[in-house]
Image 1 (cartoon, rainbow, N blue to C red):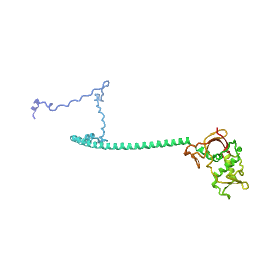
Image 2: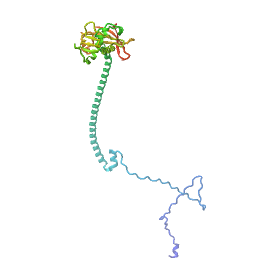
Image 3: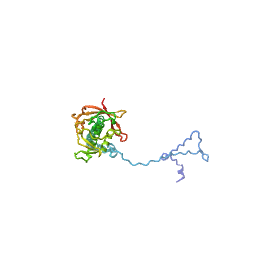
Image 4: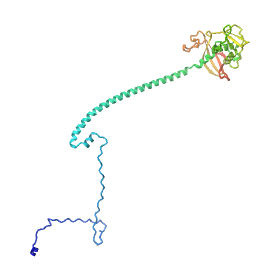
Length: 326
């Protein structure tokens, strides 16, 4: 290249071909704070603080929905081009199965309703039967308590041999007729223990020891009554052997005598006072074993009052007095 070439003026401008890099704008200093200077005295360029980076959350795997219905299955698992067809298929399938399920549920409900009605009816019937049974039992108990006359009938049994003698009134056992006391004691002994005797005399009469008759007298008339054994003045159903202290008792019947029917009992200072009716042999309620309560109420021919007291030793009641009924 010659030196003449240096003087050649080139008019071509290459700056347009290689444009300059734009200058970065300097950040303005904050108000109230002087710009920092470097050690050489020049202003230090402000440092641009980078924004803190937020850590990215790890991608979670897709999770299937807990309950799969028709819409979630179409939206999540079918592609867009198949959604319309899938919806039609699923809708048709769901409609058909829904009708079948409704029919089955209807049958089940009807079956449950019938079963429930049957069980409920059975429970009500059993409850009604139980109520009727309890009511009948309670009614029977109340009626039995109101109409229970077992205690009065026990007095009848105790006074049978006494009423059969039709005694005259007396105020105490020691004032009672001795023959009446002896006869009643013998009848009580034979009525209660007659089958236990096996000794007989030549006439076929039962031999009864004096001690048994004395015990019967104590049970009937108490400890204050004294038995007076003797042969009867007139012929009767027994004889007495004083040498052997034995009674020879013949068979007898009580069908032609009065029978007692105790109507009431009350307590007073003397003891238990009974109102006793005398039922005659002609009364239709009479039976061999006593007054028949099943045949109805008897009609006594008369009434007497019997006063009973309690023996302190045996704690049993005994006949203390007989008096006319008021």
